[in-house]
Length: 572
Image 1 (cartoon, rainbow, N blue to C red):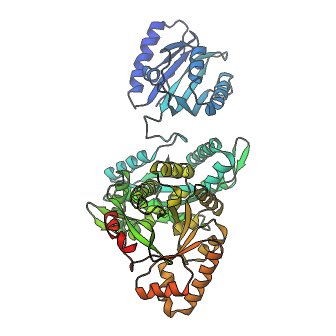
Image 2: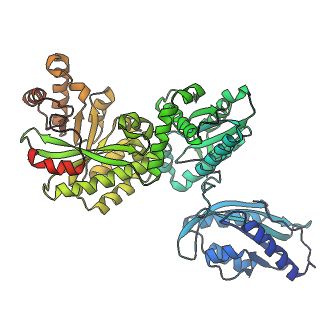
Image 3: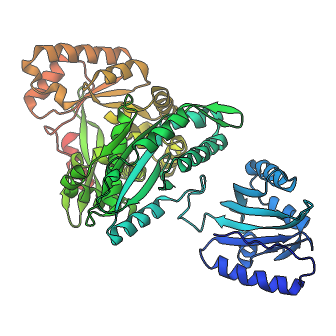
C-alpha cells in the first residue's frame, strides 16, 4: 500500500483538500479490507481519518485537531504497548526519524483488542517545520495475508504464491527455517521481547533473501519462496547460502532492548518444476525436511528434500494432504477407538487408552502408523491434538459414571507440549470437560523425548500439579526413556510391545524387564505392559514381574466407544 504524500501549500483550499483526500481514501481503502488511510495537515492543525477506521475504533470524528486526534488514538492502545508507541511517535515528532512503522494492539468499538500496524511518513519543510504526516493502518483481524508480529506475508499468502507459480508453469524453490528452543527466549525475557526477536529475525531474513519473498508461518517457522526460469540449475542449491548467512548472523547474536540474544536455526527446503504437484504437497515436503533437520541437532546446514523424493512419495503426500484438510475441516474423518487396560491384581478393567483413527472419503481407512510421524512434525497437529483430548474426555465420562476411579490414557505429542500456551489450554480443556483430573493420565509419545529436558520436566510437573497422572509410552525402546524415568515426574511407564516379544525364550529380556519394573516401582511409578496377545504371555508376565496392569489384543483390539461399552461387563 503506498503512502499518501502531499508536498504542502498553505494556501490550498481546505474544501479541495478534503475532497481530494476523501477520493484517495476511497481508492486506497477499497484495495484491501482492513487497510485504513489517514493524514495530518500541520499547516491547518487537522487530522483526517478514513471513515472505515473511525467506525471500527469508534473515534469521535473523521476530522480532529492534531493533539486531540493523537490523544484519542493513544487512549485506545493496549497498556503493554502504549509506552513503545508513544516513544516511537515522539522520536518522529522530534525529528529523529521521518517514519513511524510499528505494531501494537488497540481496542475497537466493541471493547476488544486487535493487532494493528501503522506504516507512515512525516514531511517537513526546508526549515524543518512539520508540514504533513500520512500513512496506512493495517487491521490484522481483517487481513490474514500479513502476519501481524513481523509484518511478513502469512501462510495463506505463501500457498497462494506457490499456486501462482504452478499455474504459470514456473519452477520454484521453498526454504523453511525455524528457531531452536525459542520457548527459552519467551521464558527468560517475556513475550514482548520474544516478539521483538521475531521481528529482528524477519529483518535478517529480508537482508539475505536473495530476491525471494519472505513469510512467517506457524510458530517460529519462516519461509523463503523464489521462482526460477526453465532449466535454471541454481534452483537445486537455492537456500543453502541464504540459510548459512541467516544462521551465522543469528549465532553471532542480535541486540533487542540492550539484550544480546544468541540464536540457532535449522532448515529444510524443496524445489519443483512439475506443474502437477500441488502447493500443499510441496509445503508438506518442506515441513518434513524441516522436521528431519530439527531432529539432528548436530546438523547445521540446510536439509534439502530433492525432487526425486517429492515425485516418489507423491501418493503418500497426497494422502497426507487429505489428512491436513480433514484437520482444517473440524477434524472430519477422524474418530477415536479405545483399548482396555486390565489390572494385574484383580484381572478387571481399570483404564483404557484412547487411540486415533482416520477414514478418508477418497482414501478409505488409513492406519495411523502411515501418517502420524509426518503429522507430529507439522504445526497443524496441535489442532488435532486438542480435538483428541476433548473427544477422549467426552467419551470417558460415559464410563466414569459407572466406574468412578476409571482412568483414560490420552497421548500427547511434542507439538502440543512445546507450545507456549500449552498449560493454559490444557487446564481450559480439562475444566470445560467436567472430568476430574484424577480420571486422566497423559501419555508422552516417543518423539516427546526430543524436547528440551527442562521444558519437558516443567510440562510434566504442571500436569501433575493439576492432579493429572503422567505416563511414558513406548518404554524400553531406547536409553533416553530409562534416563527420563529417573529425571522426570512420572506416574506410569508403559513397556513397549517390541520389548516383550518372545520374552519367555529370551533370558536377557527377562533380566532387563525385571530391572526396569523393580526400578520403576521403587520410584513410585506404576508399570503397564503392552502387547499382551496370548494367555501364555499374560500368565508369564503376571507370574514373573511386579507389574501393575496389562494391555493387548488378548483382552481386546482397540474398538469404538459403542463396542467398548457393550463389552465392559466382560472385563469387570
